[in-house]
Length: 241
Ligand SMILES: [Zn+2]
Image 1 (cartoon, rainbow, N blue to C red):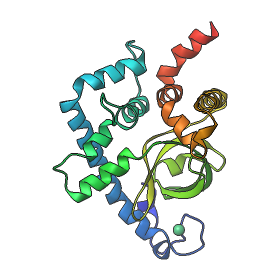
Image 2 (tube, rainbow, N blue to C red):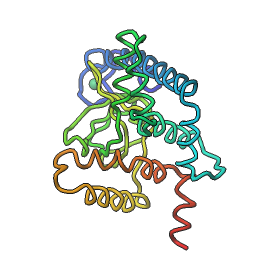
Image 3 (cartoon, rainbow, N blue to C red):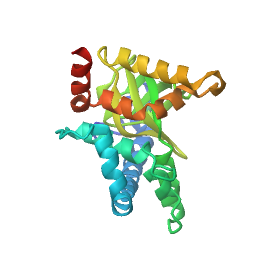
Image 4 (tube, rainbow, N blue to C red):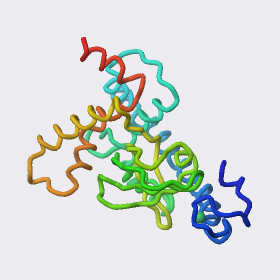
């Protein structure tokens, strides 16, 4: 991890000019632990859903893959899994993550983290500033604000101006990203715009503010397919034919 390589007396990689220990060091220390705790809750959501909603998960998988045998890479698997647990509603309403967060026997911490995972909806964001290995400042186009998210991995692979599809998870102290990040490319950008424009137009004017966020939720399966290399290729070939 980039963070652990920064000596505490060195200048902070965020570019503030201050020493690391007087700037982003504490953030870096606490967020590694927080990320592990969040990942553990994510695994318990998946395990619970696998036990109690196996059939629904199989149906969701068949929906998004179009029932074809597909070999998905690691990022694609994460994209699809996050869609299934965070967007795909179960019969009777509620996503698997939402249902889990409402279980009776959760302790307060588990419920709080699960509810925040469940609330991490697809967002469209433009990268404003980056401190590699530490954080990214994002112009959140979905929620119309500017947010700094802690991210060791993504911050090392992104630059100002990049447009990303990501799930923002707000916390009591910091915000972070939940699940994989999709980079909007010259290839996928126009298709994403067309998809969202169509959804917003079909919702009608009464939707008002938050229209983009709702459109992304409604189009979450199509967006996930668009971001997944293995899933989008056959669709594009069909349309080109
Ligand atoms: Zn700093």
